[in-house]
Amino acid sequence: MLTGCSSQDDAPPEKKSIRVLMVDNPQMLELKKLTAEHFTKRTGIKVSFTTLPENEVRKEVHSDFATQSGRYDVATISNFETRDFAAHGWLRPLDSFITRDRSFDQSDILLPMQLSLSGADGKVYAEPFYGESSFLMYRKDVFEDLGLKMPKKPTWGQVAELAERADRPEKGMSGICLRGQPGWGEMTAPLTTVVNTFGGTWFDKNWNAKLTDPAFADAAQFYVDLVRDHGEDAPEKAGYAGCLRNMKRGKSAMWYDATAGAGPLEADGSPVKGKIGYVPAPIEETSSSGWLYTWAWGIQKASKQPRSAWEFMSWASSKEYEELVGREIGWANVPAGKRQSTFKQPAYKEAAGAFDDATEKAILEADPRKPGVQKRPTLGIQFVGIPEFTGLGDSVSQELSAAIKGEQSVGSALRKSQLEAQRIGAKYKRR
Image (cartoon, rainbow, N blue to C red; front, side, top):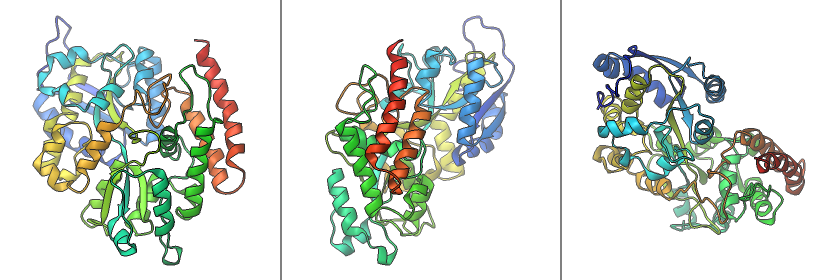
């Protein structure tokens, strides 16, 4: 596999070293530790890593790739950036590498991941390191004690009723935990999936802003009411990490969030291991509503070591690497959610048996081309795939967080937000 792209046409020889910029999450730090012994030793390709927190790595990647400085050969990008970066010509298409490197097995990559990492021209521009969707997690033991039954495919209306019945503030347990912390990657992510399934959208296919339309307004009001009435304490401060802590400490009966949250809940030593049930993201008007997210590898167009860069990416996203992590660190730590074969791997199924089927189903049902009931102007489920969405998502979530705190109404928050969305939509209408 590692020599599958070692001779492309009559290209000049490359240096046996590449520079990789990546987010400093635990699974990528494990990759960094394994690279010298298991990649460089075999290929002779030295890899120099720069690791940064998520917000910082996004800024650094954008700056370096936009200027095509060539400082980094490979960087972690998400499916949020991929199509935009490809449209600007900042990424190298990967199709020729994929064709030559058949052992990489592109067909094994889950289709929603392939779609979300392709450009408008249909070419592949990034390969996933791991992927996630979203689902509803709930305490099976608490539901049994209270005589509650979780539907196999719940609606948000049913979830609200269950949250009310499971809410036991006298025992320090909220009915549900939902992100209320401002941020386009925090509260805006789950909120947008609620908007989608309630029939709303940020923009219609012609870039008309729709934040004050009834469907968007109803979804936002529902979300704010649910988290205020039956959510965690100080929800305006709670993001992914906070809700994860609440579930592990027995402070929430339900949690709607990323499928990645299941791993820590089921890890050895977790006080709730074996006590959690997993069902699809709640729906209303759509057949599914889970989001789609992946950290992936992209090659900067200006890289002078593209073949060496691909060899690294091919290894880091391969079946071989997953098996290495399983042997060296444990199958619960495998960067999963990107390959069909992972969900069929017996050792992985044993380690992730509580949630692997639910995770695979959530990812396969996620469709970035059609996340709601109407056509959209660009790809994206829990986000709108344009650079301006980071600022828009941040500001809208700040306004709605203020509504959660009771400082203003949801209607007021959305009227302010609509004006900003209209300005962004107008820019794209002129293109």
